Image (cartoon, rainbow, N blue to C red; front, side, top):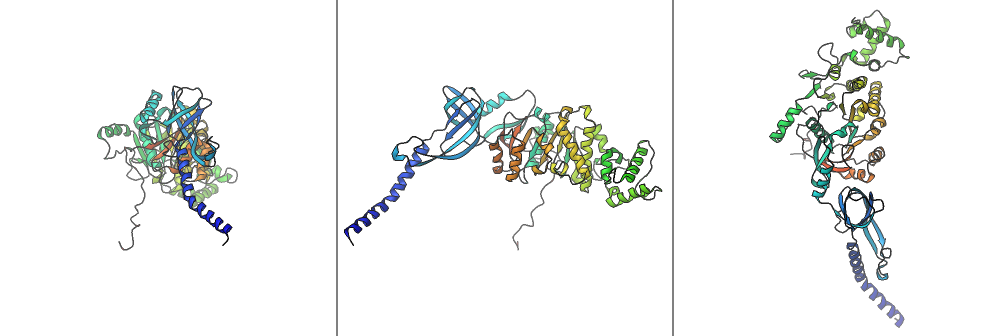
Length: 513
């Protein structure tokens, strides 16, 4: 081998042997620089701020509270977005020997919640103490009742409260299966019972709230006694022979559009049968009973009435269990002249989906018909994608959706407030969703749903909505008129028993056990 070749081989060995040392030096220098990045914030308007922070032992997080200290001032803020970023050491002004090193750090934006509203630069940002957040929220509490629903997720020990007066706006609650939505909605309803005198009517499709008046055995005795007194105003109407309040209607209780929809009648296409139905109902209103049931329809001398009877027989309308036959107090009587403050309508106790839709339509149309009374009421619609869907499945569902949309658009000035809840926000009618000023968002993994909510609730910082994919059970984003600012909460313990429950998974056992 030539001397030149030997020299080249020797140089390669020397360089190769130094690579681990160079890598160690690179990592050490980068770590030192990254750890040295200070958490500093700047604001050019005194309302919003940008910040940087080291990724090492990072204490700031999206939705969390920070104290910004600088120039003799102290401000309370909230982080709205945060993301990893990087820059070369040269961009950070380091010496040439380190200029090729890539430095990683956190960058984000936030909003000023309290303090001096002047612009500032390079204020030191640190996580807020629990006492600092609590003191600020206490100063903001209104004179009216506040409803404690749990703790702030990112300020443990600070009570999460809702301003009861904020329920004079429409509210939207959503969360996928397993997020704790049903449990948490029950807790909100409990707090409304305890802390307000607001009337409530609850459309309950899964029998989840039928035990709203029953206190858990584990509840604190003093609190249980207080709640029991408030919950004595809860009445459950259900389709059960032993029920205290039977979920019944008279056919004449429902409006004319719903009557025709039940029979699948079109006033133009089915004009003879439509006219026959109108004649029967007009006679009933004058106290003359023209027909007494399906048999009378089928045996009528009037061919149009007989055709109406055949239609009713084919649809099974007269077999529905909701018809009172003139016996007892009907649901519409209770809606128009309430005897209790909180009415739970157990739709889950009904035999058919058609009956559930008709009851829902009747509730909404009755409130809209009597809106001029201006009697405040919170109308709770659980599984709202079934009651007011974006694409109604039939004429009755279409009518219910229309009344829900009218109440959403104009009901507030008459004292009619909606609280709609769903697992499927994209399936709820846009007019209902767009009119909601309050949001309770629990875990949602669907990016499509998150995008839909981000667009519908544009007043909520997008960065806060996006974190909903990481929520654990019982965690929620709360925003709107019933809180001073959008924040994350962890719901607390309910006082009442839960209704519907999952089927036991006793079948999921290892074979042979």
